Image (cartoon, rainbow, N blue to C red; front, side, top):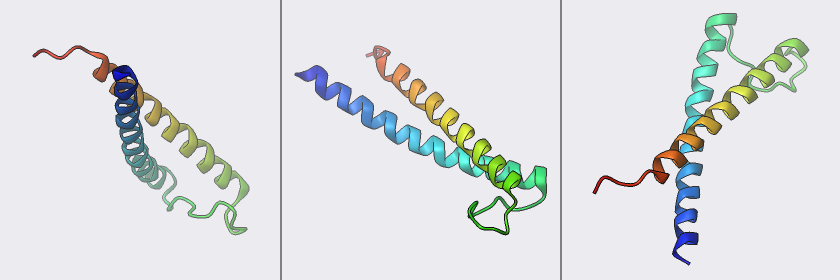
Length: 87
């Protein structure tokens, strides 16, 4: 029974870390987009004023970047939580 509670706590920590990583990744990707393209990233890719290539590029870069950051952060948190404490 105690194992299930520990797993829930680890999942909660992993989720919080993943959300934080996604937030930071989005900020970083937006900053990188501005530097590379010289424009703000599209806020609404469905807007007809945004070209299809720009909308697709933004969607792919943002999706891959955020999911990569979330995956790495969640794995790092899980690895850290599994390590025995040095008490």
